[in-house]
Amino acid sequence: MPGKQVLVTGGAGYIGSHTVVEMVTAGFSPVVLDNLSNACPESLKRVEAITGTSIPFYSADLLDKPALQAIFDKHDIEAVVHFAGLKAVGESVAKPLSYYKVNVGGTTNLLEVMLEKGVYNFVFSSSATVYGEPQFLPITESHPAGACINPYGRTKYVIEEILKDLSIAEKNLRVVLLRYFNPIGAHKSGTIGEDPSGIPNNLLPYVSQVAVGRRSELSVYGSDYDTVDGTGVRDYVHVVDLALGHIAALKKLEDISGCKVYNLGTGTGYSVLQVVEAFEKASGKKVPYKIVDRRAGDSASVYADPSLAEKELGWKAERGLTEMCEDCWRWQSQNPQGFKKD
Ligand SMILES: NC(=O)c1ccc[n+]([C@@H]2O[C@H](COP(=O)([O-])OP(=O)(O)OC[C@H]3O[C@@H](n4cnc5c(N)ncnc54)[C@H](O)[C@@H]3O)[C@@H](O)[C@H]2O)c1
Ligand SMILES: CC(=O)N[C@H]1[C@@H](OP(=O)(O)OP(=O)(O)OC[C@H]2O[C@@H](n3ccc(=O)[nH]c3=O)[C@H](O)[C@@H]2O)O[C@H](CO)[C@H](O)[C@@H]1O
Image 1: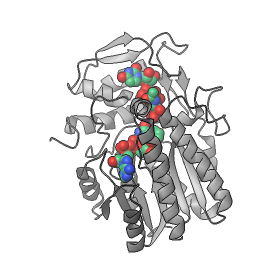
Image 2 (image 1 turned 90 degrees about the vertical axis):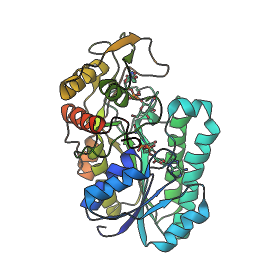
Image 3 (image 1 turned 120 degrees about the horizontal axis):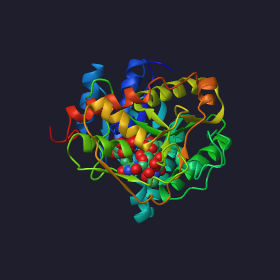
């Protein structure tokens, strides 16, 4: 579908902005919708600088149906890549209604408008969080899903189920659900990257903020897991590889029917201390840390079997942990305060 217009919801955010870059490179014409609740307009300016292309942007909310309808009326949208939503696990426990309203309600609004306007191609940002506590490793797409341990995870699972039901009811609808493992890293230019507001929840943003001097030390959540060194193991995947997974999914939409599910990960797990060591090497900075109690809800090890994506999408993560850390550091060191205050 190259050349065709693709609506990218949440396209100003971390994964969305990287995907917009790769979409332009692949010949698609992205149209971005984002309410900027967790992003800056600066990220899209930088995407425009990287790509040398002007990106149509709508500052609009998923819950604002007339605004969605106006975008579909203005553009000949062929497919939707749906990133927009709330993603902070702790906040989802404190404010579950906001999470159900924005993530689930926002998605049903978007789907209603798509169907009304005759748009039938959909790629959705799901998460390995839908698998809950792993029952076996590596995790394949047939691993049981739904035993989520927080409202954020449940919203992802509920949306997946809605999409499966809808793709049965609407024979024209084609859906690819992408279950991301742990996206990290940044674009090679160092001009776009992850810019969390407040104290980062996730490992890499925290590590890089320690390395750049914004925080004094990392808390390592537990060192008594049954892993290589006792710290938690995850499947970190470069955000540019992840972005390329969306290009593969968009192309796949042309020859599927119904709803397909793919893991996007590397298949390799690294421990917290292995990540810290790799980051220190990549940045040349020390990352002081202290071991603290386990974080509630964390699993010892989570990593993907990504072979289905390779077989059916022709997608495979190419970038290793060293490159992920180097790219993350380039972004963080060039933009110590993220997008806002340079
Ligand atoms: N980053 C991860 O570790 C990870 C892992 C698995 C899945 N995901 C999912 O991938 C998607 C993108 O994640 P990200 O890391 O880029 O997050 P992000 O917060 O950087 O991007 C989400 C974007 O959606 C926008 N948004 C939020 N609510 C909106 C609304 N009501 N209307 C319009 N725009 C809205 C935000 O402003 C933001 O730019 C999310 O759906 C997230 O749940 C992320
Ligand atoms: C509880 C939680 O937020 N879960 C989310 C988080 O899972 P994950 O726990 O997979 O990602 P993460 O980046 O929060 O943690 C990765 C690993 O680092 C450890 N760690 C993390 C931060 C820190 O300051 N110190 C530390 O030791 C953590 O215990 C784990 O072993 O991200 C995923 C996406 O990537 C999903 O969105 C999950 O829902």
